[in-house]
Image (cartoon, rainbow, N blue to C red; front, side, top):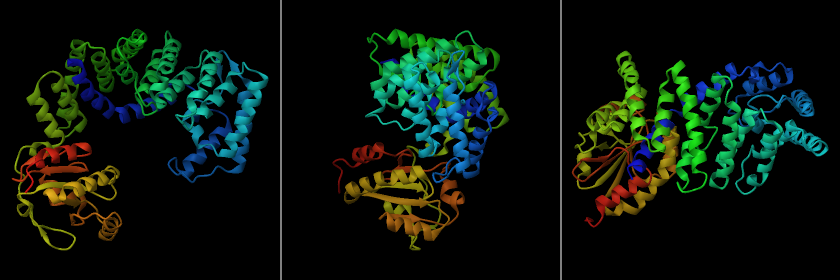
Length: 471
């Protein structure tokens, strides 16, 4: 039981590091592997990447010029015809990250050529690799698992190809538990191909297992299996191999993200003492960062996690509050508003809501998570409003017209405080709000129950408070 309690906390912490880890891993991969896309000497591929850059990677409406398409088709046909040399294809690195952007007619042409080549030469690993990547570029859990043999075939035909093993693992994680054993096989093959090679390359590929390319890290997969399952020993061998890679990296380049991943692996396998030793070792690193910048939120949140793991609960809370000052209000009576008015120009006072359960919702129409949370708030409001539940919105928008339009279109029935000041809103500063949505749930006496009243937790807290205490 002790182990199961520690997993969720460190899991959340490790995933907070993903964007940092991902950016570093991607840039270092392109520099360190010597075969990055932008280093590829083929003009057609460079032209394609330039097209993406000009149109914006996030733009869903970009088009590739017909001349570039024709050159790319010829380029890929040549790469596919070349097959495998020294256990590798000459297809460009990171192809799985780009193939979903290929225009459909171009993708069909290359796919058709690859199918014809593979039919004529079943041992052509390049054709198999392109077809495998194409098959999984839009994962459909109802059909894509049936295409796994293409990945299996490619891994056999390209015995030195690390990327296809990584891609196979990533694809299997997107397909969920139905492909867990196949994910294990792909991961074993990837680590085997890395063994004995350049350490930096091994580190960079292993670090990619902790980016958003995969839907489940090796530890997450390990924690999902029954510990009596026959493959449990193989998963533990994989985790130990990953530990070796990361521990070797720390001997050369101390890195806080790697420290935390190592601790995560130790905890998952039940070695709490080893995990705590890692936290003790990394603690001075974050303390030094705080000396240089007392407002370093990564260092603050990391130290909160470290002290929590080491059993220093008071220090853990102190650092959590420094990271998010709103936490200090939990259990306290929230001070009265500064003079504020709602969109109708009427003054809003917390004192007017004594005897009610109130959700103070700091939000904005430009905030994606805020918008995603609104249906939940509306549902809870409709269920509990007649039993004494109220909502006060504190909008950080700057455009009143757009705000009013949004409120009308989405039929938000509660009052909205708005002053066009955004993050300079006096209530934001007064209550220490540093990120939105920030949802303060306040009881009948004005005491803050929670500053994280989101999702199912909001309804659970309200039900616990209101319960049988209806007026």
